[in-house]
Structures are given as C-alpha cells and as structure tokens.
Length: 96
Image (cartoon, rainbow, N blue to C red; front, side):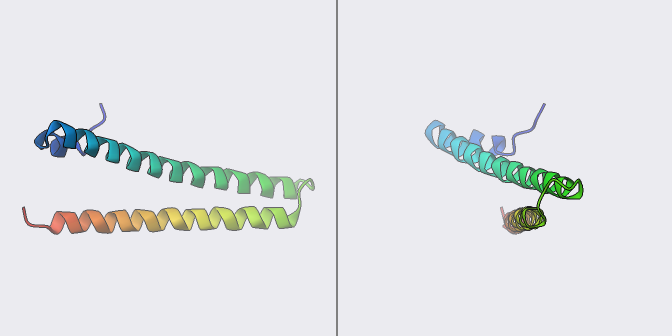
C-alpha cells in the first residue's frame, strides 16, 4: 500500500480545495515521472548509440551527441531533485 504524502493535508481542507490540491499534486507527480522517464530514455539511447558505434554500425558524432544529451538530462534531473530537497527542508523548518 503506497502512502500519499498529501492525504493529511487534504483531509483538513474543504472538498473543493482538497480536489484542487489532489489535482495539483497529481500533475506535479506526472511531471516528475515524465522527467525521470526522459532521463531513462536518453541514457538508453546513448547506450545504444555507443554500442552501435563500437560495432562499427554507428557514427561517432551521433554517439557523442547522444552522450551529451544524456548527461544534460541527468544534470537537470539532479538539479530538480536538489531544489525539491531544499523546498522540503524549508517546509520542515517552518514553525507549526
């Protein structure tokens, strides 16, 4: 059973606000999922391009472009994670 981190918050909100909060949380979760999937796809593409290059079937330029794209996507993912951790730490420091 997965725990919903928004369940405690949405329980205290009125029904319309709780629905809007759940929808916003859902969109945020979907955006993060798309980012992670994009990172995985770019890494897989880079791996396949490098493998093709090593087998003599691919171009060095295509492999390097795929590697750079994968690296940039990974850097973006790490920076998003860092910002999310910062935001979480800020929220946890707030007095109740």
